[in-house]
Image (cartoon, rainbow, N blue to C red; front, side):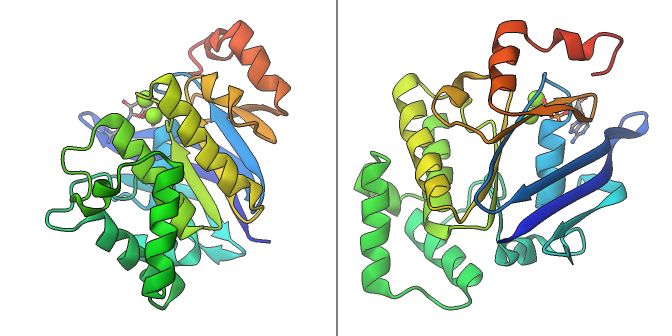
Length: 253
Ligand code: ADP
Ligand code: MG
Ligand code: MG
């Protein structure tokens, strides 16, 4: 079973007044098959954690380690991370001109698996997964992210997740901008991947509502650039009832 281990991670971003420390000692271990929710107020550094794991050049690692089965993830290029099995939903948030969803998915699967998936089974797999996500078949022929609505972007993320079957998936604000039906469909996709037992999921969110559909094994509260409390699913209920205020008093965030 693959294990992603984040230890004492410190990350800075270049602001107007020079570098600013955003992550201040993040410790987290995610194993294949586990679902972890990271919840916290806006501006607490959740997306910075996701981008740092993705290898986004804007974020400078100033301390700590991230390993996947002992391999140094921080030393890997973005592509190497994907090949090692770390999936980041916002890895390709930009438009990819002239590349269809269908070609993009097959190229990604080829890069990750080390060989091209057999065309016949692949086409069937893509079609079935899209059906389950209630996506129109014509979506496969559209260019990646070109004019995608918020909901289409999220569905496209889950389509990638289901087809690429990473070891560790990091989903940042997968619930934002989704209406209730889309939220259910997207959550069902995450749950299918989770039920396979082969994917460790880091579900990053500001709101508790997605956790009505996806039951995490572990919940972590993120404030002021670090994890300040960890618990089971009951912690999400507590957050829903009490909010984040207790964690942000005294300027922690
Ligand atoms: P969250 O996802 O929890 O809302 P973020 O990680 O987006 O938090 O932001 C945490 C803090 O880091 C905020 O104060 C934000 O302004 C700052 N920050 C994040 N990314 C950048 C960036 N690329 N440039 C400047 N400041 C940034
Ligand atoms: Mg934010
Ligand atoms: Mg964010």
